[in-house]
Image (cartoon, rainbow, N blue to C red; front, top):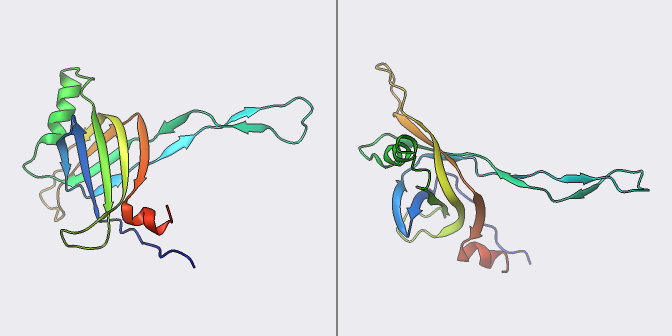
Length: 163
């Protein structure tokens, strides 16, 4: 009998950018894109093998992660970017955690899976477009380069997979 499958709801997530166990930036981001890793295979031509090449695992690169949220009075994203860019404090790295929650809207909502980003570096901050005739929420963006991406399943998801 197959294990029951859980659907992931794309709008149920929370983001934390952490340094030394303390969340310095996070909260109510409305969109996260760029959770992507690409492995470039190494092609090896083997002597005597006329039908194709041997493929070996090659270097992995990571896409820039883009966080979007409505502009609020919080200034944490800009402060971090400004610290790195203006003060040339390239050592100010944060680890990222993006937790995907189950469909429950109660405080008991469980984490189904967690994307972990290693040593994030803010590479772009985009302030909200200003337009006096616009009716939508003002949105700011923070673009992150990082050195690693891992995926951890929550206890409920791991149990469903038979782990």
